[in-house]
Length: 444
Image (cartoon, rainbow, N blue to C red; front, side, top):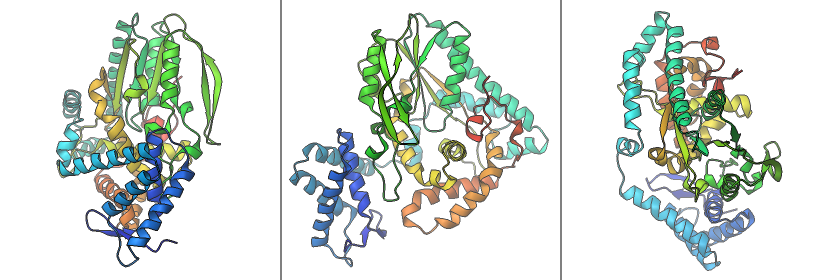
């Protein structure tokens, strides 16, 4: 057992020392350059701890920077130059970001699709749902059914515009990518767009990227035993790119199959070949990640999806899109993955980190942005989640290892306290994108 019991964070806080964090950091760096052997990372982590113990004791905890210095030293001395370089570059990038720290509003503004946001805001103002106070007033007046109808019509209008965009270029388009951060509604939106286009006579070959995950045992875990799937390195990006090139060249490809229960991928399972005029359709969290489509010159259309809700809370602050998606994912994961809500909350920092690095920065490379946000979804979510957020605020308030979970839980709890609840979710249409998260989705 390590003699070192604590470490000192950059903000001066003293928190428990957990060796798995070092192992995970080394393994992440290895994965980024193609390594997949966690046992090597564990051995290197042991060397790091031994060296730290020779320098520090349980009563003189090292700082984060001192631990990182030792990690670099061990990697270099053991001949892992490429891993060391990846680790150093990541560390330097984080340091540069801290030195050039911008205010939260400045950071977010870099990735906000302003033109689309303003059109959504105009719509929200016109329909009196641009503030919590206004939507509560409409609910009190018994207008929730009208709100649902208006919101669904706006979403349908976006879908029709995308359908028209693709239809107008059907003779040249070879690839359609629908991307967006977690729980933005990609699956339902993709199915709806495909159905609309099939009615126009277009043919699609859908590529399910979930089948390209690496075996579960090859994924890094954190100190809580939680797997991190929120990174492009969780997917075999090179194989995806290879298959896209082959399909677009007219070749037959054998697609892999991923068994999620076993956590194992099986190669060369399903044959597929594009017919004349067929379009490859992809919906993926990492659809905009450049290496996925590297070298593909065929004409493509990229669609971005986000719940761009424009609603101010009672303090005049806009409701955060990431908070809406967190609540959506809690509900969806509980139904489809047997995750409890708390696990989704404590995993969300991975989700947010991955999308901020590999999804959101590429918004400006897309051809169209769809708003999947529904002003009525917050009243629907409150009866389902409010009690849980109340518990998490108390549970994580003084837990230094769960600062992120507490911050998010407290913010959403404060918001939901002001929302007028709508316990009856039967008002949500069976084909609504919201059904993707609360269950009962029917697209027939």
